[in-house]
Length: 163
Image (cartoon, rainbow, N blue to C red):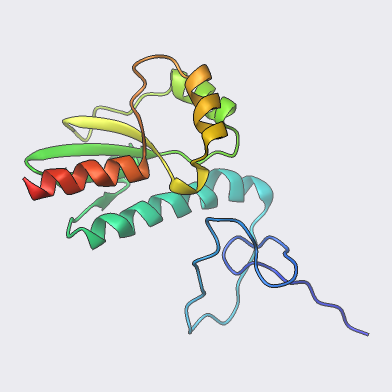
């Protein structure tokens, strides 16, 4: 008797019985022309694929607002460059399961000054947003680290567009 595993078509994680259950995966379906879907190893998934999903999600949201974001400008100096209301925003999207580890990383991380920008932010995806995650991040993050949730960034941009 042959057995098969149910694998999430987005992240490759095994699931039971109907869906992955991860909030970042639930709205996704594979392209109709997809013939095969591959799963990457844990390290590649953790440091390349999953952060890339957050970048692409935000990129799509910015397109929906009528903007023309640039992905990975300056040989991936940061993740997204956006021109809105006469200013340039540099966005470095961060997606980490552990808010404490993310805070430690952000406390020492900087957003490169080239390509030039007017404002720069580390942006967190909405699927990480919870009261617990926010609390742990706040307790461990140094003051003046420019962090925004993606929903906050999008709200600010919508306000800038409306002006």
